[in-house]
Figure (cartoon, rainbow, N blue to C red):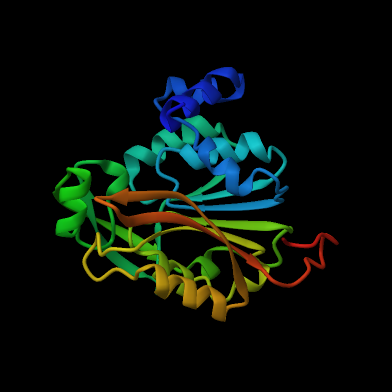
Length: 243
């Protein structure tokens, strides 16, 4: 069965996803292959968009604290509707420094980025840049206080700005047990960090590669994938071993 058809069958058979579908939001149930065996107490959703991952998280881990970051006003309004007060929503982008930046708007809104769209992004995904929007940029470790309830998950999907988000989370990474991050193997956004840059940073920070998921291929070449990294140490706060 085609992955897209399988996904929508999963959404239709689970009534908890129906309210989000009424807002045009399809929960990212495809992430269950990577995360479905975990029981997170804190979930940080960076690049929350309309709530695709947030809807999945609220269903998979209904007792978890969910913290979302989304700088775009229109997707953020839908995010608020689908999470129904069950998420802490921050109206900012994240990066390595606290400042104001220009978000490059794409004709496909979930592909907007703090980096200019590159020629490969435009060609492969058939989109273009359609404007800019000034947005606040904060460091993640300046937005959240510690300790976090464990085990904790940091999910990052920020269209080429992943490494900057991680650099701005340096003071928080000791509180994170798993990181699930979209990375690129080709330069889709101008000046973006690629797979090896992100993987090297996370390995140096004490995480180990626990798998690649949802790989996208174009003309036989890998373009993007979701990487799962797990902290190597035992989660002392919960008594659980992080696999």
